[in-house]
Amino acid sequence: MIDYGQFCTVARGAEVLGERWTPLVVRELLCGSTRFNDIHRGVPRMSASLLAARLRKLEEVGVIKRVPCDGRAAEYHLTGAGEELRPIVLALGHW
Image (tube, rainbow, N blue to C red):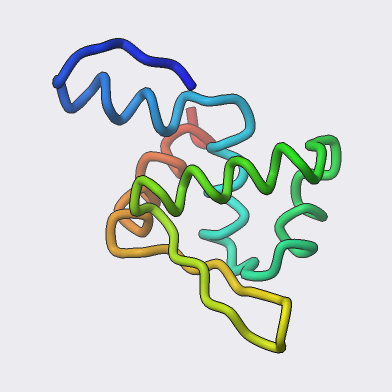
């Protein structure tokens, strides 16, 4: 993880969203993917272990929540904070 060592909100946001693949994972969640395999299909060149790590980190910082279902399977849903990333991700795509 990038660590600027600052309390600045811009630095903190960059620490979370600036990690490789993270904006694409968030994009997949914004587009409606909720299951691990669905998210992975949207970022096929990302390793499954790295995707799992990014999902754990996004959950840790409150961007997503993991909802257990169907025994071992889980779904991933954006929190309010995660949904607030929508205009940022869309702006990146537009830019």
